[in-house]
Every structure is written in C-alpha cells, then in structure tokens.
Length: 360
Ligand code: SF4
Image 1 (cartoon, protein in one colour):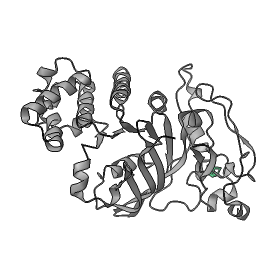
Image 2 (cartoon, rainbow, N blue to C red):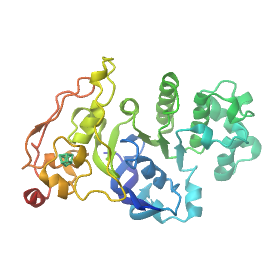
Image 3 (cartoon, rainbow, N blue to C red):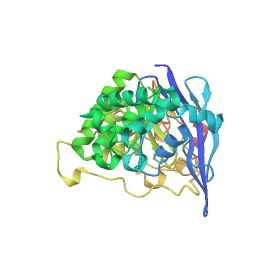
C-alpha cells in the first residue's frame, strides 16, 4: 500500500434546491496514493463529479454544502476546513484540474500563453518573460507543435484535442501533487481520446503526480487506472484494484456496468446490456440499498438496511448484502471480454452485521 496524498472520509455533500435538499454525496470514503491513478466511475448523477469538485472546493456554496466528513490533502491539510484564500493558494499549485470541455474552461479572450503563465506568475512568482518561456516548454511537453507560435494564439484558433492539451499544460504548470481529470476525453473523438490518454500516462510517469480520473468510460479506466471506486447514488458501491473490479467484482451494480461495456471482439447489439431502470431520487434516497429497485438479486434485507462495506480482499470492499456469510450463493457473472474466473458472491465471512441480515 502506498502513502496517501489524499484521504477522503465520510464525505457528505448536498444541494439546497427548490424541491428540497439533494443528497449528492452520502458518506464517501477513499484514499489516493502518491503517484497512482484512481478512477471514480458510475452513471451520470452518481456523485462522482460533485466529489471531485468538492475536493477542489469548486462547488458553489450555497446552494452546495459540505455537511460532514474530511478531505485530508498531503497528510496535513483538511480541505473542508481551509479558508477560500488558503484554498486558492493550493488550487492550481498543489492540485490541478482538467475539465471535460476545454472550450468552456479556457478564457476565450486571453492567449494560450497568458493562460498558462497566469498560474506560474501567481503561484511561483515568475516574471512575465520567465512565465512565457515556461509556457512554451509546457506546450512542447504536451505535444503541441510550434509552441512559440501557439502561445500567442487564442483558444478558438486551436482544435478540440489541442485545447485539451493546453488544459493539461495549465493543470501541470506548477507541478501539482494531485491532478483531477473530470471526463477529460469525453468531448473528443476516439483517435484524439487515445492520444490524450497516452499523454496523461506519459506525463504522470514523468511528474509522479497522483491522478483522480472521473469517467463513465470503463475502457479509459482499463487504460489508465490502478485502482477504481465505483459510485452509485452518492455512495461507494465497490472499490478495489483494477483487477478486483474487472475480474473479481462482488457488487451487482459493478457487474451491470461491466455488462454494458461494448466488447471489442463483438459488434452484436445483444452483447450490450445497459442496466435497466434509473437511479433513485436523491431528494429522498431509499433507506436500504439504493440499487435494490434495479438489482436482480435484491433480498428483503436490501430494502430496509443499507449494506455494509464488506471486506473482500486487501483494499477491496463491496457494499452488498450478497457478501454476507448468510446470503444465498450467487455466481458472479463471467465477462468474456473483461472478467474471467468470477468468484462466488456470498462465500466470504461476515463483517459486523449478522443481526441486520437476520432482521431482513
Ligand atoms: Fe442487490 Fe441487495 Fe446487493 Fe443491493 S445489497 S446490490 S439490492 S443484492
């Protein structure tokens, strides 16, 4: 186990809206180790982007509110407790963020060079000429040809792929210890996606920054991540190593996500099986397992009792009652393209709530 650069504990975030309070993040815990890539996956609305934005303290407050929990960065700073001014110092210097759509995140009225230089001047107190020279170096680093010419151009003069490279250059400018990439390739076509992923992997090796990758694309996860957090309805459904999630998943929602990934070895539509149904209303989340209404294995206990996080193996947990020792044996599906040799759910020992199982 590596040393954590970020430790998120029992994070709860909600938004006060006209219809009431939306409980977007409901007690999420995970850690990111130095130099690793952790992917947070799940359908849209599962709370993955809100979690990322809360780590960067980018959610609008109000209507957003961090209700509970801690986000400890680099072993000492609790992001939740920092003042806006302290957070501003950390954002862009020690933590960087890459957004899905560079066109809306880049300033259309400023040249590429000035936007890269801005952080360098602010956080590293470089002179204008030093910052411009570094901007040229960074553009070269992210694979942009003719960087001396490009620094003087505006975002609209660049292609989508180039703009995303510029975003990466801005995020990396001050050598952050943690980079959060929120759907960094979703807006790009497949070829450019592959280039951006290759670039991020290469840069991570050079800089040793940890990356939190927010995505709904398991193909990107397989390419980049060492560990995976699967989120559903504002909670962590399962987390583990890439192999745990792809080959030894123990949560029906993870099985559903894996089943819905197009197989490279088949073009047949029937091989694609989206998860039926929709996630629950987070204005009034269910008392029991949030996935129960869509789960083919739901039991009585699932309706009333929120599942515990069962320990499956080192660093691998699954919040599903099927992992209770008293649960019926359910064979984990085998996913030919992604998962082989699936273990049998229900074969592991109890964690600490036999009683709730019995009550169900
Ligand atoms: Fe399905 Fe129950 Fe597991 Fe939830 S706890 S995923 S409803 S089996």
